[in-house]
Structure formats: structure tokens, C-alpha cells
Amino acid sequence: MSAVERSAFGVERQRDPSPNAQRSTLNPVPHIRQRFRQWWQARLPLADTLALTQHNVYILPTRAGFMLGATLLVLLVGSINYQLNLGYLLTFLLAGSAAVGMYVCHATLRGLTLNLMPPPPQFAGASATLSVVLGNTRKTVRHGIGLAVLDATQADRWSWTDVPAQGSCTVQVAFQPGHRGLHRVPPLTAETRFPLGTFRVWTVWRPAAQVLVYPQPEAHPPPLPPGEPRSGGSAMARVQSSGEFEGVRGYRRGDPLKLVVWKKAAKSDELVSRDTMQAQRMELWLDFAQAGAADREARLARLAAWVLQADRLGQDYGLRLPGTQVRPGAGEAHKHRCLEALALC
Image (tube, rainbow, N blue to C red; front, side):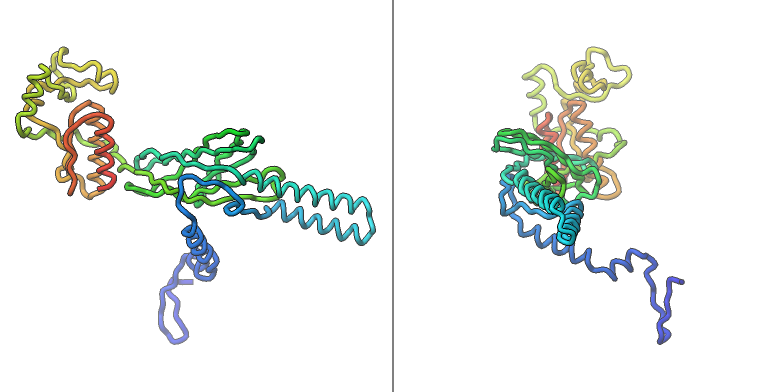
């Protein structure tokens, strides 16, 4: 059948050749389910600590539980029909075991405390790791508790653990943010099917924490831009007070060995030399307007790569962005300050 269909009145119309599109228009159940889930999740409170009680823990039979219920029904009908005393005994023994398993399963999750640790910043394209501390005040061990991101589709998304008696354990789950910026932690879910697997007990949790995602650094960036003339006499005062300027640059063939900074070379596996005269007159600025890339995201990726490169070389550097400027500095805190400015730009 062609992609163009002709109606009874001779009017041509474009037919969507995708079977998934036809299936989605004919079956509105997934759309309704998604809208209901969004509405329900929006009603949950935002909190980084969640205490599980009977008000936020839910229970339903699994497929094995439904099969067990059907088996018990068949056994009961057969026992009534043939007046089998042993059939009654087996039926009510299995039913009692299922009832006890339902209570134990619900009690395994009820009473736990979930506490989300502050997530560290991540680079775009990498998985953000979330650490959740599970606290147990009961005198018995809680077995078979799983934690996962609610809307994740991977088969191996679950992290399973046993929580010791009157103790705690840490479970790590991961999700991958789509782009740079400040992202709210997605809803999490915890569940258990202990001890028989006939019931599924679960809860849904909306943490209030946010994770900062840095731009993904450019894979092969160009060399660092040249320095700009310094303003004021701060550089000369710095030289006179210390007797030696702290600026460094990449090693060039012909540099004397006495100018090589061996400590920085041992840490970064790259040879760097002291920039004696040049560093007194110039300072390194990483400018958004001079990044030279095609679009905004490519420029931010190049600036992120330059920030990492300058930090690895131990240089003082500043950052200029539209509406934001970070003064020249060095160190781990300065690097994260620049990367945060790039993420929120």
C-alpha cells in the first residue's frame, strides 16, 4: 500500500507509514497511564529523607501470587467436590503460608528510613551516581530490598541489598542526565518480594536534591589561548614579594632544565616550565567570545576542556562568559567555580 491514500471523495491524504504511530493512535492506554503517573508523582512531597510507613508503602500480588491464588481455588473446589480432608489441609496450609508471607513482605519494607546523600557534580554524557543510606532500627535483618530510578528502562537498573539489624547500608543507583545544567534527582523506587515472591511491596520517593551537570569537555581541544596584558601592578608586587613568579606554561624544546617544574610534571605527567618574563606581563583568560567554535554548546565544551587543561598545568586563569566573569585563580575550588559557571551559562 502506498504512503498516499485516496478517500471516497477523491481527496488525497498522507498516510503515516509507521506502525508504531498507528498503534499509539489506536491504543490510548499508554498515554493515559503516563498522564496518571505524572499526576500522581506530582502529589508526592519533595524530601531527601523518607520514613516508610503504612501510608506510603503499597502491596500487590505478583504473577506468582496470582498463580498461587488460582491453584488454591482449584484445590478448594476439588476438596469440596470430593470431600478430601487432606485436600482441605493442603489448601488452608498454603493459604496460611501466603497470608504470613504477605505480612512479612510488607513488614520488610515498612519502618525503613531512606536518606539521600548530596550528589556530586558530573560531566554531561556520564552517569550521575546517587548514594542512598538505608537505616534499620529493627532487631532483625531486612532481606532482599531493591532500589532503582523509577522511570529507568534498563533490565539491570536494580541495586539489591540486605539491611543489617539496628544498622544501615549504602546503596548506589545511577541515572544519566540529558544535558548540562541543574537537574532535579528523578523519582526513586524501593521494593521487596521477600520471602515467597508472591507479593510485591514498593514505595515511590521524590528527592528534593539537585545534581549539577558540567558541559562535556571537547575531546581534542586546541591549545590554550595566548595571555592578555595584565592590568595594574599586582603582578610585579607578586614577583618582588616571592622572588619568583608562579606562572607556568607547557614545556618548549630548548627550555633550560632549571625552569622545569618537576613537582607539577610528576602530578600531571606533562612537562611544564616556569613562565618568568611572559607571565609577569600576561594573564590567561578563557573567553567565550574567543572560543572559536560554531555554536554555543560547542564553545562551552571547548571552554570546559581549557579549564581542565589549565588546572592540570597549574596555571592561573580566569573565565569570561556572557553576563558572568570569574577572576583569575587556581586550585580545585576555582576549577569547580568555573565549571559551575559553564554549566549554568
